[in-house]
Length: 120
Image (cartoon, rainbow, N blue to C red; front, side, top):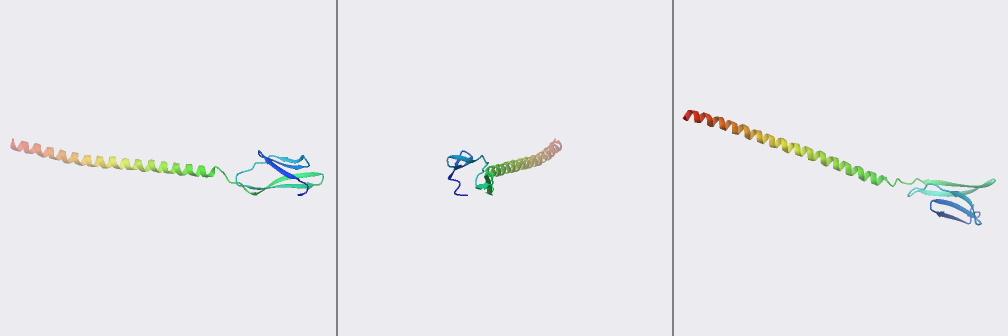
């Protein structure tokens, strides 16, 4: 009933319907970001009935932050995993070259000892 309500006032999270300088509806709804709502005032027999109908649900404002946090954690985890694998691979490669050079040097030393004995 549009003629019944002279105006509506929305301030600081409360909704009021005013009829000739007195409040006929007073409610404090929970409204979300980007939600679409209808504030309905109806005449219900002995009094006025006010309701807030949600036409479109609000979005979760923390969802983009949570998604970015998960992406950053995944990147951090992958970086740690790859760096650990690379470090182990380099250590393994270094140990292989060191053991190969040790066997080569030890075989050279034995050969030199045998030559010294033969010459001796």
